[in-house]
Length: 182
Image (cartoon, rainbow, N blue to C red):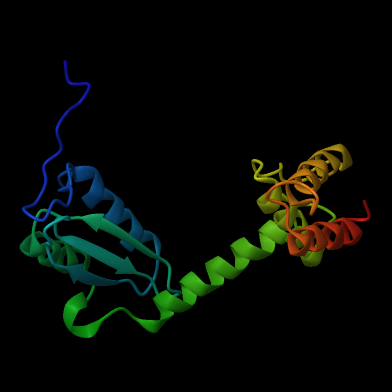
């Protein structure tokens, strides 16, 4: 029947990867290398959980990781594409890759802050109310009625006269309400 298919595990109990390297992986690597400049390859050895992988890093730090059948296949691929190949365990990853990840993370964070007309302090207040109320996260640009609903729930849980209420949490709720103008 296959509903509860058993996954292969190591002796330590870790789940073993259930997908082998495919031609699509090699095609994706070739496409990455031909569409970007200054690409270098970094081979990652096989572990108990994953197969041998190769990381291609472009000149601007953009990168991709794919499975390869073995280290020889990674070497052959790098030679055919005329790109340098390094052992990731020996040389590590280039700084430009870390810089690219930092830029991408900063960009993602700034996009999240620009979701609505709310300042970072107001977003912090919304998150405080959601946490204290124990509700699901609000939509990207919550309406005033959504905010008031979460505020009521947070006040109900934090009120000092109720069982489990806490004066410090109540003060946090009231401060968040002031920041949001509720």
